[in-house]
Image 1 (cartoon, rainbow, N blue to C red):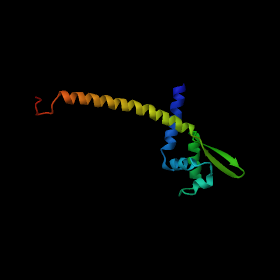
Image 2 (image 1 turned 60 degrees about the vertical axis):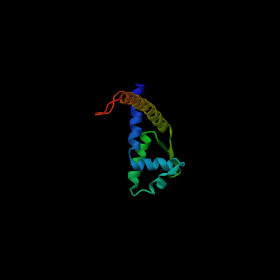
Image 3 (image 1 turned 90 degrees about the horizontal axis):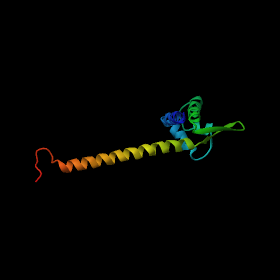
Image 4 (image 1 turned 90 degrees about the vertical axis):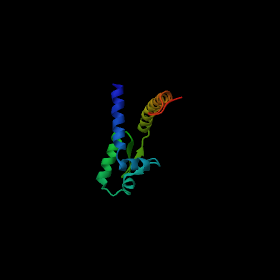
Length: 121
Protein backbone atom coordinates (compact mmCIF):
# COMPACT_ATOMS: atom_id res chain seq x y z
CA UNK A 1 0.00 0.00 0.00
CA UNK A 2 2.82 2.41 0.86
CA UNK A 3 4.51 1.83 -2.52
CA UNK A 4 1.24 2.54 -4.33
CA UNK A 5 0.76 5.76 -2.33
CA UNK A 6 4.33 6.86 -3.07
CA UNK A 7 3.83 6.05 -6.76
CA UNK A 8 0.60 8.04 -6.91
CA UNK A 9 2.21 10.99 -5.13
CA UNK A 10 5.17 10.93 -7.53
CA UNK A 11 2.78 10.72 -10.48
CA UNK A 12 0.95 13.85 -9.27
CA UNK A 13 4.21 15.77 -8.79
CA UNK A 14 5.63 14.75 -12.18
CA UNK A 15 2.32 15.63 -13.83
CA UNK A 16 2.26 19.02 -12.12
CA UNK A 17 5.85 19.72 -13.16
CA UNK A 18 5.17 18.74 -16.77
CA UNK A 19 3.62 22.13 -17.53
CA UNK A 20 5.95 25.12 -18.14
CA UNK A 21 3.54 27.58 -16.48
CA UNK A 22 3.47 25.50 -13.31
CA UNK A 23 7.28 25.19 -13.36
CA UNK A 24 7.50 28.98 -13.64
CA UNK A 25 5.11 29.33 -10.70
CA UNK A 26 7.27 26.94 -8.64
CA UNK A 27 10.39 28.94 -9.58
CA UNK A 28 8.71 32.17 -8.45
CA UNK A 29 7.54 30.63 -5.18
CA UNK A 30 11.10 29.52 -4.43
CA UNK A 31 11.78 33.20 -3.59
CA UNK A 32 9.07 33.19 -0.93
CA UNK A 33 5.30 33.47 -0.48
CA UNK A 34 3.46 35.53 -3.07
CA UNK A 35 -0.14 36.52 -3.73
CA UNK A 36 -2.16 34.89 -6.47
CA UNK A 37 -2.39 38.24 -8.26
CA UNK A 38 1.39 38.64 -8.23
CA UNK A 39 1.81 35.08 -9.53
CA UNK A 40 -0.65 35.73 -12.36
CA UNK A 41 0.89 39.03 -13.48
CA UNK A 42 3.67 37.73 -15.79
CA UNK A 43 1.42 35.24 -17.58
CA UNK A 44 -0.80 36.01 -20.55
CA UNK A 45 -3.58 33.79 -19.24
CA UNK A 46 -6.74 34.43 -17.24
CA UNK A 47 -6.96 34.41 -13.46
CA UNK A 48 -9.21 31.31 -13.58
CA UNK A 49 -6.51 29.53 -15.61
CA UNK A 50 -3.89 30.49 -13.00
CA UNK A 51 -6.25 29.19 -10.30
CA UNK A 52 -6.46 25.83 -12.11
CA UNK A 53 -2.65 25.66 -12.25
CA UNK A 54 -2.47 26.48 -8.54
CA UNK A 55 -5.04 23.79 -7.76
CA UNK A 56 -2.94 21.23 -9.67
CA UNK A 57 0.17 22.27 -7.73
CA UNK A 58 -1.78 22.15 -4.48
CA UNK A 59 -3.15 18.67 -5.29
CA UNK A 60 0.43 17.53 -5.89
CA UNK A 61 1.38 18.90 -2.47
CA UNK A 62 3.73 21.50 -3.95
CA UNK A 63 2.03 24.55 -2.50
CA UNK A 64 -0.41 25.70 0.12
CA UNK A 65 -2.63 28.76 -0.03
CA UNK A 66 -3.27 30.95 3.00
CA UNK A 67 -5.72 33.80 3.39
CA UNK A 68 -4.16 37.11 4.44
CA UNK A 69 -7.21 39.33 4.73
CA UNK A 70 -8.68 39.42 1.23
CA UNK A 71 -5.46 38.26 -0.38
CA UNK A 72 -4.60 34.62 -1.03
CA UNK A 73 -0.89 33.91 -0.59
CA UNK A 74 0.80 30.85 -2.04
CA UNK A 75 3.65 29.12 -0.23
CA UNK A 76 5.96 26.53 -1.78
CA UNK A 77 6.14 23.11 -0.12
CA UNK A 78 9.44 21.46 -1.00
CA UNK A 79 9.03 17.97 0.48
CA UNK A 80 7.43 16.52 -2.68
CA UNK A 81 10.41 17.85 -4.67
CA UNK A 82 12.72 16.11 -2.20
CA UNK A 83 10.85 12.86 -2.86
CA UNK A 84 11.24 13.35 -6.62
CA UNK A 85 14.95 14.10 -6.25
CA UNK A 86 15.37 10.92 -4.18
CA UNK A 87 13.55 8.87 -6.84
CA UNK A 88 15.66 10.39 -9.62
CA UNK A 89 18.88 9.78 -7.69
CA UNK A 90 18.01 6.11 -7.14
CA UNK A 91 17.34 5.65 -10.84
CA UNK A 92 20.43 7.64 -11.85
CA UNK A 93 22.61 5.39 -9.69
CA UNK A 94 21.04 2.29 -11.24
CA UNK A 95 21.56 3.49 -14.82
CA UNK A 96 25.10 4.65 -14.14
CA UNK A 97 25.96 1.18 -12.89
CA UNK A 98 24.35 -0.32 -16.00
CA UNK A 99 26.36 1.98 -18.27
CA UNK A 100 29.57 1.14 -16.37
CA UNK A 101 28.86 -2.57 -16.86
CA UNK A 102 28.20 -2.01 -20.56
CA UNK A 103 31.44 -0.04 -20.92
CA UNK A 104 33.39 -2.84 -19.20
CA UNK A 105 31.77 -5.44 -21.44
CA UNK A 106 32.50 -3.49 -24.62
CA UNK A 107 36.07 -2.77 -23.58
CA UNK A 108 36.69 -6.44 -22.85
CA UNK A 109 35.17 -7.64 -26.11
CA UNK A 110 36.76 -4.99 -28.30
CA UNK A 111 40.17 -5.91 -26.89
CA UNK A 112 39.54 -9.61 -27.60
CA UNK A 113 38.17 -9.25 -31.13
CA UNK A 114 39.94 -7.18 -33.80
CA UNK A 115 37.78 -5.00 -36.05
CA UNK A 116 36.30 -6.79 -39.05
CA UNK A 117 38.86 -7.28 -41.81
CA UNK A 118 41.95 -6.90 -39.64
CA UNK A 119 44.11 -9.41 -37.90
CA UNK A 120 45.47 -9.24 -34.40
CA UNK A 121 49.21 -10.13 -34.31
